[in-house]
Image (cartoon, rainbow, N blue to C red; front, top):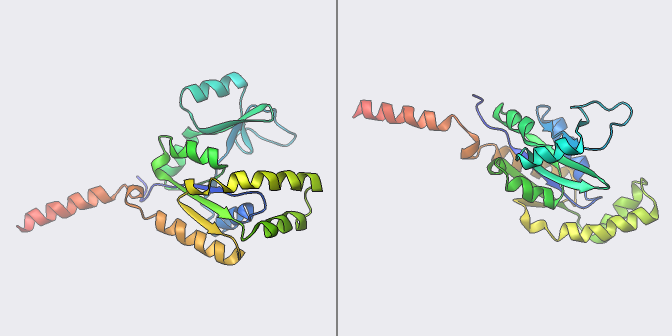
Length: 213
């Protein structure tokens, strides 16, 4: 038995708020942190491997897995199903390693309501302002003006669900936000439910107490 159970760390934000950068920094800080590998019904792209980029499934296999309760969360996106298989996540957290999820608020709710939800830690990243969010999308020069406009239109729907999360961080300074994120993770790792050996230790203390009586 590991000294502690791993956490299901959920990061969500509107596009451009800094979630991906923070996720990379978090994984660089703790190389033992595992990124959740999703399952999908889309065909593999050149160079992709089953179990590395995705778990590739047929639609029937995916639907069966959902029916059996084998997906922590799932969604239908652009004609394909995507989801987070529960089995690999359960094995990872029982081994004492945290699993990082990049999902939206709907995925957060599904994970929270799953059998492993009691081990979940959800964090929402907010931008300091809407003009700054647009500026970040524009300066990274990855999207056309049309795509940026669509991302901005979607951003408020995502932001409006901030209240579902355990923690909400305003990413006005990346280094400071990273430091706050690490503090949260370190503290949450010490939750009573994350420490399976505590019960045995308390029983030992009880036995020792009775022996002294």
